[in-house]
Image (cartoon, rainbow, N blue to C red):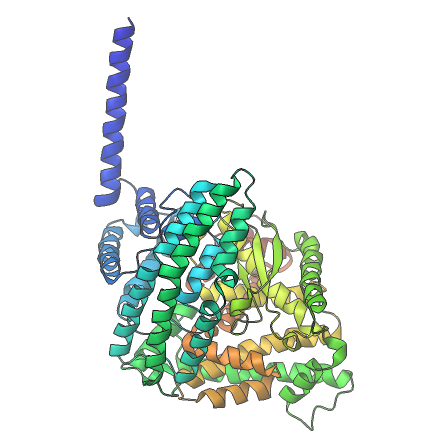
Length: 604
């Protein structure tokens, strides 16, 4: 009897194994049985291609000991796979889908089309800059993503360090290809890159960011004996001396040589087919077909409108607004001691504490405005010292998909004079609540959807929402103090100015100095902030256009909903309609809001 049962069980297991094998082969090499399986295929391919992405999602299941393969060969293979996947995707008939299935189809279609378009410009743009790149990204990844919870994790950390030399050499191969195509960063960008590299490379070994990170994580483990920790630290330091530091030395030497070949021209118009590339960047960031000329003029109009509102508030506070440029008045105001923190360690700690209080306060009121809320919270952290000099005033980092890492708002404490108290609320609302944290954390928590919907993003949607969130906070009763309201308008003014200077630099051939002067005269931001912002637009052409374009679109959609729904309009349900599908291109968001309006009207 037992023999018969075993034979039956064995046959069943063999059948299951055969079916599983057929499924996996079909999934990876042929057109999957259903489009949901195709979505799984896409995600599996991304995961297999990027161990670092998988680790960023909070998982150790896929090559936790490896860095991404950034070789030219791997890039070429990824491009070929992308072309095959897109051709396979188009074999599914869009007419067969509706509801969330149709949204998923269109989101992936838009993404894959964009990736296909990017192939045309793969050797344009700056893969490394003072704002980011492999030489800085590896530090952020190891510190913020690679957990050390046991002996194996520590060995995996050391293994990843051993691969940094190869990774950096592959990076320089890509940069040389860009150089051969006439894409060389301006000299002022390279100089700041070299400062960043030296800040990472030059400290004594025990003060290196990676050494400190590994040591702190390892020392926190209670289950490892001291001898094991000493051995692991010895292995780690060997990799630092033999692989990591020489890799930075090679990169520094390369950019010191490249500096001799650079010039001061700031815009991508200087590239072969630079105008064509910039229009591609505009479409990629805004998900619209707007031209550079249209966006430049839109920016000028928005600047005039917002400046008029700020002047009204300043007059009410008895400022003389007719004798000086608005930028000078705002800049002088930001230097008023009553708006500044003490430039000390205690002052910096107070900035972090105050940001946390601002976030916690508004978080408590958000159920009145949102029908869906993120599960995770937000914690405030200082920008790491190695990159604070060139980083923005603040930025947000999404929580991990498994919820083990909360959302993080990083505040830049490098220059406290660039953090006037009247501007802090708006920055916190933009980066955290109800801005990036609400949008990105809710996207991470979406259930019943293909997993790619949790991490694909449209800049115009994401940044447009965050800028809209600043205004929403004011509408919700925050920022009612006139100076805090001026801070809100000054932040919106910055986004309008971005339309002017980004297009000015890359289309109208403005110089770096011309763009800095316009932004300084108009916004009144600290010189350090203005310089950092302008140089960001120089190396990330088009990205800064997305903020105002996205905000304008969301406000337009809200106005449409209010007009068509009248008394049936519910701000909580509107926000649900905006957020419940994750990040969407603006064209798809427009369609979804129309659907929300129609469904609401049908319920009456």
